[in-house]
Image (cartoon, rainbow, N blue to C red; front, side, top):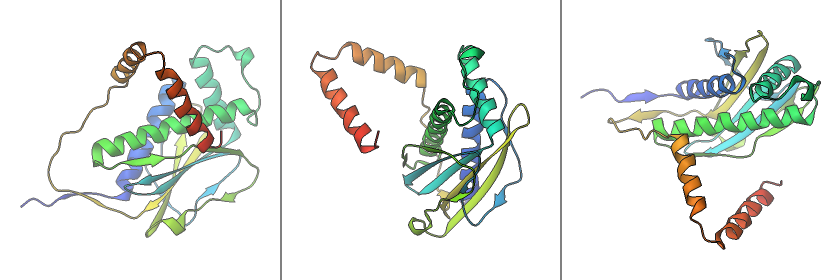
Length: 226
């Protein structure tokens, strides 16, 4: 009998790194890479100049932190905005601008969303994320969810932008292993198809339905504190 294939926490880390490079490379139009050497750490921290963190739970729990230097944050921000057709004259000029924090928070949300989708497809496990939080800071702030984790592990990975600016991602999660007992079909998600179906559904909704949808969205925003 063949030995079951094992997926470790470090394999899950590679999945997360792939989501970071995929989302940021697509958003900026520039190649984002990461170091093949991963650092084991004992604590996770928000670090200068901009720290962003998001929690996830479900099949397993964890914390993702991305710490941007001001140079890396501004390069990603400017590349993303110009890639969307925004002129240079309309862009923020300092990393402490709310526009920069909002953009990085949006990209963080896309990164973890892509990661949770891959986990669901490849590991057949469902995890949920909360709303990313951004902080512009000038000193380290320790962030921990160790009390909620069973045998926590923490890792740090260095990423490099097209202009050689460096930023870091830190992951803390349960020490866990997934054993693949047999092959299964992965459900491929087509974002374009989903959006098209959503638009078709919106066009056929009765007049009273949008009010109900708006109510649900409002409740969700209130729950998130927005």
